[in-house]
Amino acid sequence: MDSLVIRNAGEGPATWAMGSLFERLVSGEESGGALGISLVTQPPGIATPLHVHTHEAEAFYLLDGTITYQAGEACHELSAGSFIYLPAGIPHAFRVTGTVPVRFLGLTVPGGLMALYDEVGVPARERRLPGPDATPAEEEIHRWNEIAPRYGLRVVGPPIPDSSAVSSS
Image 1 (cartoon, one colour):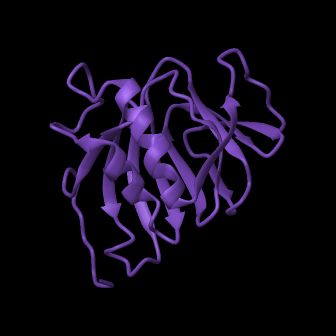
Image 2 (spheres, one colour):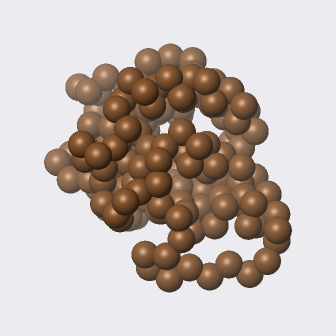
């Protein structure tokens, strides 16, 4: 489908995955595969492993909070108002830093990657960060390992260490 999509605040599907809230603004299916955008809320300390997307370019626009973002060998400190674009194929990872949750627009081109979070996660019962009512981390990691390769996502290294706050931007 490639048609007009309008979502007001609080509308559209929401998923809990990775201890985070993903609120879909437009899916790859809705955009004819062209684009996927989600409003993402993540708590301090969340960190992705170093990974590569083989199918999609990815971009973040930070609305609130701070992130240390590794792209290739360089680390960058991002805060509200920061934007990062990452072409497909570049190893990257990020860690939510600071003491408040981060909120960002996550964009993928083409748009198929956002469906991975829906497939691995569970529908959010409320528009908040998940608590004890979320899927246990061990169960979710098993699903990530099983499902992610179908989306062209490969883990290639560990997460950014908690103490890392190197800026080379």
